Length: 264
Image (tube, rainbow, N blue to C red; front, side, top):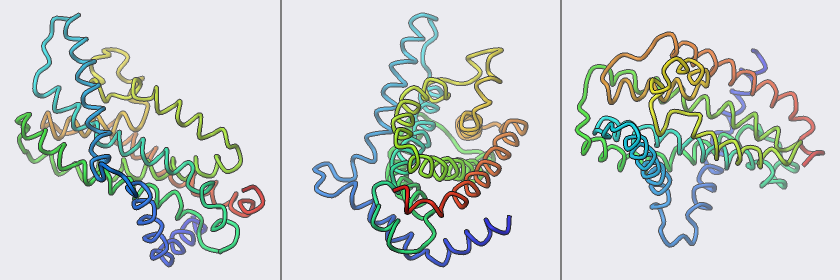
């Protein structure tokens, strides 16, 4: 734990570099882009549109009409999923794409995947305005349960950070990791309750919620759209995975860091 504390302290000391790398990643995404910041909105909108098509297809078979709450749930969960996908895709390649910095200058290498996560957060902040508008159109009100939202969103960010740190390290040693990540994210949406609610699976719901991200997305939908308190059992389960995963990823990254220069 002391090693992690020292690494965190180093990251804080190099926060200006973290800021510069984050801003570099943001500018690289929008440089010479015709649509500009609209790209940040496009990904969640595509997910929402795809989700609606899937739900409409389900409704045709089951003769159950898609209601506003279901539409709002898809819109809400599309935002953190788009953040998760963007952070992992950019973060996995973050160190491989900066070989000169990795090999020639000393600083905590964790800033590379962390910068990718923060840059994706910037995109998410832009897209959130559209999603909030969609929730208003969907007539989602407010309740005391919204106090859970900062905690749930914070856990999603920390979970994404831990996984991005681990995958960026693994991709440095095994370059086909980035392809596995692409495949996993392509099909992962079907095993994560973005297009649908976990309760639709009936007795198989607990199996789906073993994915910590699934538990967090369901908790977000429960608090914002349904105005109920989240399941403390599954939220606690997700908390354990988030912090154990983040600590484990950081330890693996620190122990492998000494070989980064010779491997890259």
